[in-house]
Length: 275
Image (tube, rainbow, N blue to C red; front, side, top):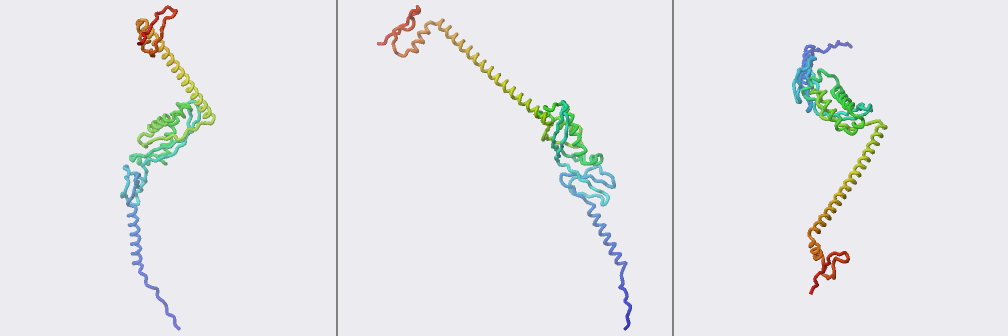
């Protein structure tokens, strides 16, 4: 038996190289296609960065084109957001006050590029929270702990105004909601006791004022009655015949023998007898 030698199949390396090159080119084309566009979601704006350089104009929401592989897009929300903030401050009487806040804020679209270029981290943590905390401490330092509790609307308004001045046009604080103001238990008990005393004092003052008003009314009524009696007496003295007229008006039809007079020396009035 004889064994023949087998020849290896002919491999066209040139053709394989061409296919490989076509595959690489296709992949590159796909990468270019998929990296040459971007989509900014509604309520967001984009910051375009090309080889480390920030484009001065923000990218609006929607579809857009960019340089493939060289440009990246950072998306920033511009819709109103809400964040919780807890902070502590001290009153003018050196009492510690713990305040829980809700902050409603948004990023103006014209600020997204500036914020990305000049400030690191989340805008709320690095810009808004520190300035609101500072504003609240400035306002609280001018009020006693009791007034901070009683005038929370005034504290909120002044804190909001101060925070807006500190932030300028960079970020917009829409509103501040004071959810809770916590004092030490001893101070809360003292304030509550004082409020009870003030309510009792106000009630006592109201009762006193009511009694004074009623007394004045009684005096006015008595004076009025006295004046009325005086006027009637004067009228009777000026018009003696008025007495006879009043007697006739009040006569019930029964004929008395004598009206008035008696031993007092007064004039007797005799009513005429009916037929």
